[in-house]
Image (cartoon, rainbow, N blue to C red; front, side, top):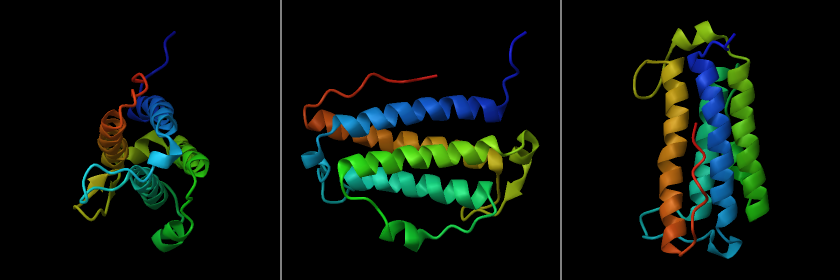
Length: 156
């Protein structure tokens, strides 16, 4: 008998692959290039990764737990070294995975107050993945501009 696929189970499977892929991208960039940014108006490689982590922690905590999200505390404790950033990134993915695992499927239908208007929790899941994908695409460009071959895509 095959396992039933739900929006939550599909998200969790994709989230694990997204984690693996982004960690490989973060690892591919040498630490001395973590300050690289192609233009002055863009974030550097390191801050792209930290931005992704912050977004994951904000959305995961705010919309999938009873905890209060403290953006100031998060930014005060951002890691600086490549190995610590990669660990923080991995932990951020794991935190979201854990919170979504504990979320009942029916809860994804609930509407929450979001700065861009009311959204379902399912839409917040889609935003979590879409935000990672958006910034990961930028990071792939950063690798290519430094003549570093990006890791092979990890898909579904």
